[in-house]
Image 1 (spheres, rainbow, N blue to C red):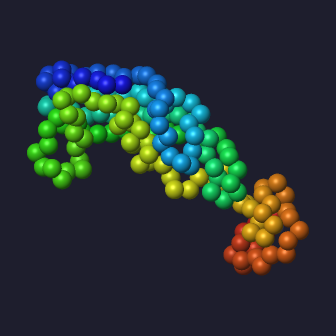
Image 2 (tube, rainbow, N blue to C red; image 1 turned 180 degrees about the vertical axis):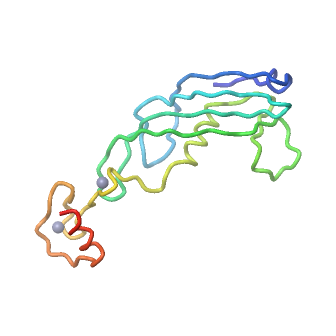
Length: 162
Ligand SMILES: [Zn+2]
Ligand SMILES: [Zn+2]
């Protein structure tokens, strides 16, 4: 959604609310597939001349577990916070998000923040047992018959779980 921030930039105290959903027409990451639209709720507000965007993006995606390679569905909630400017005083500043022509492509900004917030590792569950390095069996579904050299730290952990 392209939004004109002309008024918000020009009028102190001006605030606009957004509550909408959209589906990007490109993939956000190779590791996951969106399974819902992205819902965004937030405000853009001019406080004493400083324009800030505050909001939250919610969506679900099918992701691949980094340990066992099973696909599973995961809900995400990403906080979006930026100080918006329509001209940069200091070119190398990361603090400010430049809104050219006072027109903000909100979808693009939300997607950018989502991509930056994604973890490097997805786990289907915290104690995912992964797959056997010898036979490839998904160990969440049960033990395989392989003899394995168990890491002593892992052995202690497994004993606790029993
Ligand atoms: Zn897993
Ligand atoms: Zn095995």
